[in-house]
Length: 189
Image (cartoon, rainbow, N blue to C red; front, side):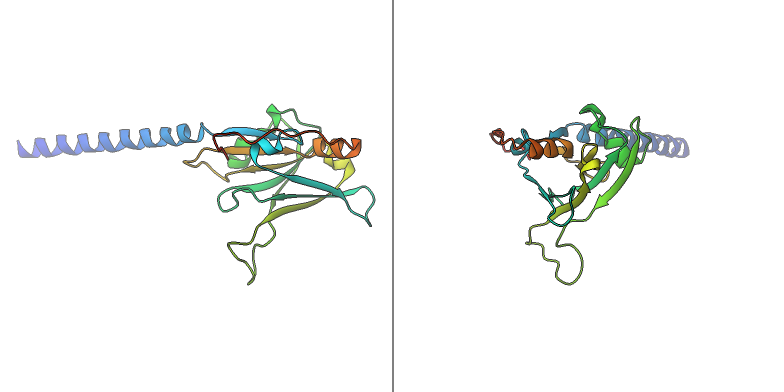
């Protein structure tokens, strides 16, 4: 009788462990699902607390420097994405491609992880502001994006970003100085 009880107790314990593991596994995806995609353009950047600077390089005609603060760098990373053609807003949601390396419907030519300034070496300091700086030829900018996200699944929400560099180039080329929207009142990242 004691042996039968011990076997039943062990089986019950294993079932509880398996069910608990399954529930935890499912909750990871639920946690990440409340993240929001942010399409960043000159018109929307302040809504997301970003400022993207684009300027021509003096001695390199047709080449531009793009600079922005490294958003949540300790947790989030950034990638330069260059595609075969301009991507629609929904095509810029590259989370599965970044996290799992899965094939996308888009023809991605370049996926290069960006390292912010102030990282590495002996001079690295936590309190120093970090920036992503990229130089691009004007022929590539229209189909180039800076994608910022967690490198893998996390228990965090907030935003994951696609910065449409073509919109900044178009804005710079037209000389437009469009009004920017205000930051959300709820203090979202």
